[in-house]
Length: 337
Image (cartoon, rainbow, N blue to C red; front, side, top):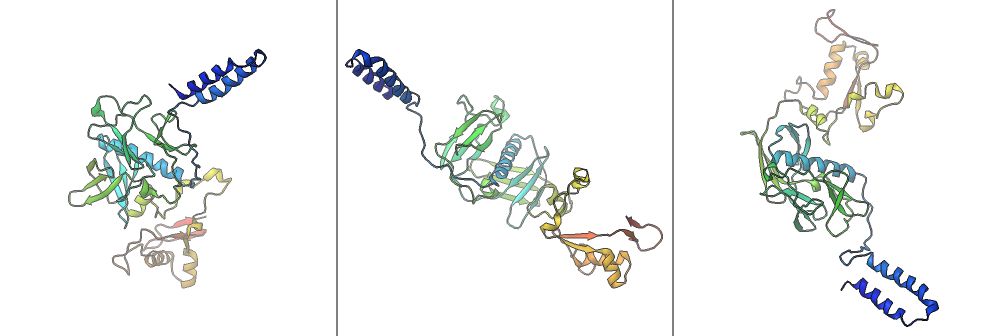
């Protein structure tokens, strides 16, 4: 018998031994105590674990993780292709998909038991690994959540979040949430994008133009055709919001109707190269001053034949005036007021 009901019956039994004048008050007390026990079911676990304070960047990491989960599902279901990519010296990739998603594909060889790792099994259903335990991801009714169209049951795209109670949770509509695991998540202050990676390895084959993604869960390999469209690396890094992007966002032109100033790019370590000042100091025309600035920063191949500098943090500044930027004067000029 449920323990809370046993306590209730015990109290009611002793009620019979009380004088009549105390019975009403005693009955109310019994019911209050018993209902306090009944309100907590035998299956409910009351946790006394402290909820650790989480870092501010966790919100951004989880948002990108949810994008990666959605993109992983789209690629597994043949609904998205890789149309471009960038990579860095550590082997971390950013992939641009045909559905406009920008995906992190960071190779992560070690296990991370603190973050729910999602994967899709051979039958086309979602699974997750958390705290070293693997389980099928279920919907709000407890049914296995379909990930691929081949299940014939529609598809669910999970969103992962860390609840205010400190537990990981999942939702399929952003409104109703279901807890994952039985333990409060520890502090995630040391976690990076690599810890939220879905992939154990990322391999680029430049001969066949394919990228192979191996799931960290060990139950899936994606091999997709790709292209490198030859766009300048600096521009790609800007479009894909790479960590080492150095280009300023010129969409800030006219920012807030000129009433407030946009974020100051010079605070990020940019060097200002003043064309007019260079002209006056060296007594050279505008084209020569402009060319020397580009050459010194390895942005053109003049004195350095293999010059390339996708991460040049410079701003070439043309103060108000008229500048002739061609070999033969009198045809075209750049006028800045």
